[in-house]
Image 1: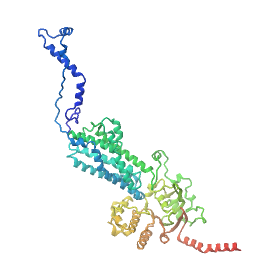
Image 2 (image 1 turned 135 degrees about the vertical axis):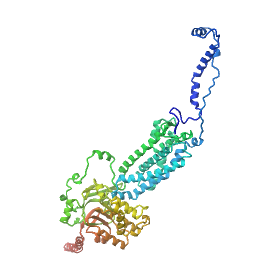
Image 3 (image 1 turned 180 degrees about the vertical axis):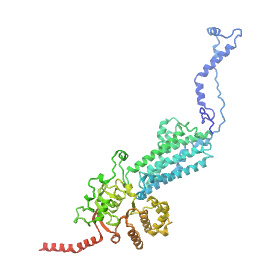
Image 4 (image 1 turned 90 degrees about the vertical axis):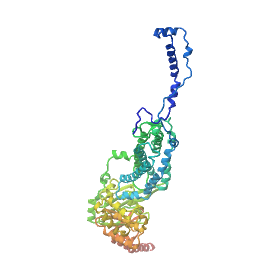
Length: 611
């Protein structure tokens, strides 16, 4: 309990010589001695002549021994002070206490930066987004995870120091001090991580940046520095943390301790309340800046927002439907798989569609890609990865998309799942635009990306459970759904195995299971059987054919055998555009024409030329 009153300085130990010396040099003691000496002299005069105003006036008119009243040696003795004990340890470590505490936080801070950037580097974050995880939920999961860790660390520090460093301070205040710094450290690490895409670089630069945010403390820790400068410096949370350590050292040295009742009183030029408040404000500021920078800074994957997206969100016109945004995006204006002349020797060849497919277009039960264009800008010039792609995918069908490396298949998929923004053009997936309604699309989207996006520390079961929850599988059927899917993809005997212990083919099976779990309406499979042995490949083909009913499936592959086995329709991409699309029988007739008719035609032409 704090028994000191509001007019008592808790930190004043022993005799405070400053006010004593000020009183001594003011001249008041000299005047006081002259007056006292005169009063004593006057009281010692003849008792028959009482001292009165008239006698005093007459005495002043005649000679008096004024030299007796002149000041002599003045001695001043202060009043006794309360008993105190000077803790020399606190006075010694006062200047370095903040740095020592900060060094203890460097390891968890470096791990936080490393893991957050690692997920970005390995595209795990984008994989979660593709499966329907919202951006705010992703960041909230990181915050909760590390907030709990820092809360545990703060509790351990409080317990370990309650009998030594913070013996006299309120233990809840000690916990609050370290926990608020932990929150600000989480947000500062998040803000730093937005600038990097490589984990090793982020750890090195981020740790040095975090440590560098402490050094303004040595500039503002002097009592002569104004309060305003200390508040400005406290916008760096490590500096605010170090200034708070001064308060602890001062109050612990005085054997008073910091309590909720005295955090308002300044120590070394700043109050402890200001330090706590600044660390809380820093947490909010870093969080806001981190979320903003995460949207607007350049990134390898995902949609980059313009710098003024905040204002356009609230003041711009909302665009919900592609038909309202682009005039002429009516189904009857754009026949399915419209031909696009790319300047090739032969025009693209497309099979005409049935009335049932046309009805799907009218009902919005298909995927319609129209004039999708993607250009990468570089120092060497612009590179067109996808060139005005026109494509339609229908329900209950598998479209096998063939093409060599660099044909634009993976870039097309990245745009359809929202990882890359199109340079121009758009697409409707079940009636929703990939530009304006990606959140709605991801609710019905299952993706098996080209590269496995998995957590090395989780098991097969934990992966399937996590993505099943993201897809809205009910808790009552979660366990059976996970077991059934593991059995479907051939991982029932590895269901409790860590992902890091799986082979490449098994990881592809798990990625396929993640894409299929939750009964998504749209399934996109980017080379799903790469790395599998022939037996596993055949089982995977059977599974894909079995689940196509009621779904729209896009499958990319390099294998013509796989395309023939799985594809209801086959498309071939080259140079970023679709060259032909149709059933396998159409392709066979086309190849028959190329093999039989064209040689005869060219042979006749050659005969006429020779004649």
